Every structure is written in C-alpha cells, then in structure tokens.
Image (cartoon, rainbow, N blue to C red; front, side, top):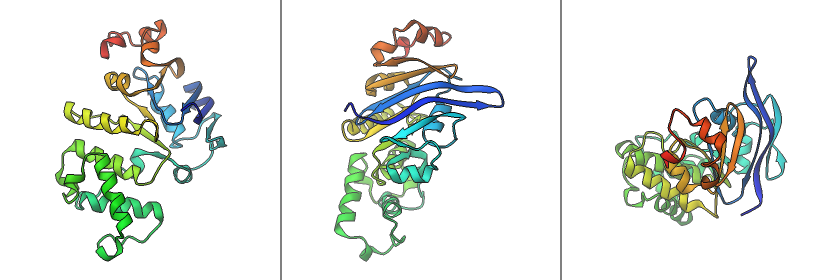
Length: 254
C-alpha cells in the first residue's frame, strides 16, 4: 500500500455550460478499497465515468501507473489492467457458472470460444475456474445455470468474470444496488478479500458498507471534492454534514 496506481489531476467535465465535475484531484493507492461518495447530484457518477473512460473529460488528466490514459479508449485501459465491472457483467443466463467463467477467461487470453469441448479445457484452466468460483463463494454451484441462481449470486458471478480478466484495479459502480441484507454481506466479504491484492475503486450509496470496507473515501458535492480520508475523518467534516442535510447526517447512515 502507499503507491498511487490511479490518479486524476484537476479533472473537469462540462455539459452544455453545466460544470458537473469541477477540478477534482484523486489518488487511489494500490491494494486499497477507495470509495467515491456524495449526495445525489454530487458528480460522483460523472467522475467515475471519467476515470473509467466511459466519457472524456473537458480538461484535466488521468494517469494509470504513471501513464497518461486521459484519451485512451476503455478497451485499451482494460488491457492495461483497469476493468469496470459492467464491461464483463453481461453473464450468459442459459450457461452454467463454470461456462460463464470459461468464456471470460478465453476473452482474456484471446482464445477461440470452444467451451463446449471438454477436451479443450486443460487442468490449469479448470483449476483457475474453481479458484475464481471459490473466491466468490459459488464453487458448490459451478454446474448451475446462471439464470437460475439468485440476483445476489449473479452479482457475485459478475465479479468473478471480472476477476477472470486478472485486473489490477476493479472499478465497481454501486455493487450493493438492489441487494438484500444477506447478499450485501456476501458481496462485502468478496470485496474485503481483495484488500492488499487488488485495488478497488467504487461508487456506493450504502454508507454502512462504505464505512466497513473503505481504506479511503473521497466525498464530492456539487462537482467538487469537499473531503477525503477515512470514514471517521470525513463523517465529522462540517461541509460533509451540510452536504447530506435532508438525509439526516452521514454518521446516521453508518
């Protein structure tokens, strides 16, 4: 930890005269879980889309491992090792969990899609699939049809398919959205297991999850960064408390 792997400098995005992101600086350290939070309209989703190259900034720069990726297309930065979850989240509901993982692995290795031919699956590939499924708690359901498992388990499978690309940085857009208590616990445990091994940048509204998972939090409001630090540090900042008025206080959500 401590080495910056993803950085934004003076990032700005303007839409028809409206400044959605206003000079945001951000440093994500390797091996950490870093959260972007803020009230509705804070600019966090736009910032996330800029960092993941879903949209281009009006001005400012983005660096991955010291390399300027500001104008680089998403597919190219994915090959560098920075993968947004939705890029591989379209699971195949009629295939098994194991087959979904095999397709993702073949995509990563640029192999032909021959998952239906068992003779083409070598021992190393099979072991890797088992490892990925075990990591997200789905090994016992490897042969289940993806469309038949619960929504929460499908979200876990999506994370597994993202991991199959062997990313250095996982970019997760509201990973707890739509999940119940048991599934939130499942996905939280999966993300927790990445610490020190993978870097995670996530946008998340569930502040209890943010508090329990994040090593560092960046708080945005009106397109600007208003606070940064641990949850304990940012939750007592007066400007953060003011930004969350109408939703009680930040600490009330923890």
